[in-house]
Amino acid sequence: MDYVSTRGAAPRLDFRGATLAGLAEDGGLYMPEDWPVLSAEDLHALRDLPYAETAARILRPFVGSCMPKDDVRRLVEAAYAEFDHAAVTPLVQLDHRHWLLELHHGPTLAFKDIALQVLGRLFERFIRETGETITILGATSGDTGSAAIHAVAGRPGMRIVMLHPHGRVSEVQRRQMTTVMAANVHNIAIDGSFDDAQALVKALFADAAFRAEMRLSAVNSINWARLAAQIVYYVYAAVRLGAPEVAVSFSVPTGNFGDVFAGHVARAMGLPVRRLIVATNDNDIVVRGLAQGDYSRGPVVATAAPAMDIQVASNFERLLFDLAGRDGAATAARMAAFEASGRLRLEPDLLAAARAGFAAHRIDGHAMQRTIAWAHEKTGQLIDPHTAIGLAAARAEAESLDGPIVTLATAHAAKFGEAVERATGLRPPLPRRIAHIMTRAERCVRLPADAETLKAHIRALAPAERVAA
Ligand SMILES: *Cc1c(COP(=O)(O)O)cnc(C)c1O
Image 1: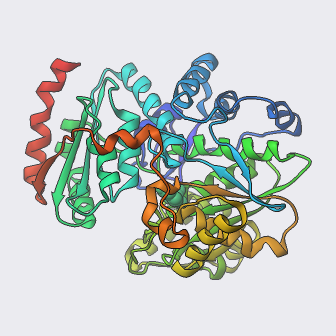
Image 2: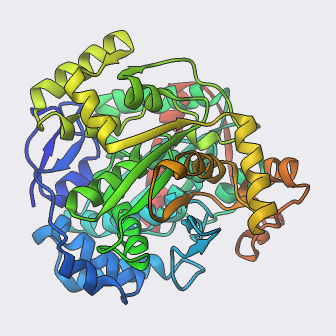
């Protein structure tokens, strides 16, 4: 399987190349040149298989000749052995229409573990083949950082440098990062805001010499391998609810459009999906894009579902490419216009295609709170604000839909205990597997928001680790 850029002007790469590259040279995102097919027979064969075996079968055509079959299976088995539920992503029935697909049983209690536990292992393997040592650099406002750190900790050939704004992440979020003592994990608290931290990361990536010297790399959600790993749970859940004979709908709490795009791919491969419901908080660029064709950047509003507080949904570019005849030059022109003006109007045929594939809802803070309360009163489940936004959208669509509706539960309620307590009066306890972080020692360096200081700090990390490796 070869991968092509959404902007049509970067070299074709195999799975290994696309995984290591992240962003394509022309600024585009890598996509498989076509979708593998899941037949009705394939889906029947998946019904009784464990999660890891399902993942191995779904991933195989995407990996192609880059890894032997048995190695793919061993890799995903190791990744999902880290999860604390034997089903990995269990389905929980709420009522006669609604299910939750719990994606938060990984090491950091958020759905990003599902893809990052695989991506960390893929990086380790592919880097070993090149003999390089890479530095994964990122900035986090809370959640992605800990999932990335847990994916990389202790793996040879790579180190991770994760920036967070000093004093502006919750204590649990900070401790999930700073209590990881692996020698290749480096937390840096930046004096400034998340935007300052993000700007530093951009500045270091933009310095071509530093980037080459340190072999800088990223594990953000534009990486194709992450999306590939997320296709699996759509299939896993749908076959348990009767696919291919039954068509299931999914409601997806959406930020960067990565998770719901994986659902689009599952459908494109042949999984019968009745409707994909995109749910955002007040940061609704994707809802406006899909419902009215008005994909235009606005100011970021801070909400109780912070993992979805984004201005630009990077993976939306993949959808535009796929819906508009996979024309790289046309996608490049659209994205150039968007980058210049902050707006993009979907032409009528493109908007019609988007509307045919997706329903979209913006859920405000009140509706989110009411949905947390509803879930608790009616079903006994404590759900987090991100999941509640998905469930609110699912309930809004239910009347106009037949069949089961699955809401993706993207974070554990305990990660956002305050919001849950406000809605229900109950504080969800931290699960045992992470409760220990509240008493553990922390390791973190505090630096000013200055690119030269940060570069000097990262350069100084290098020798010690060569010894450790
Ligand atoms: C990242 C995240 C999302 C949004 O997922 P996208 O792939 O960016 O759309 C939703 N919920 C939680 C808890 C997340 O961490």
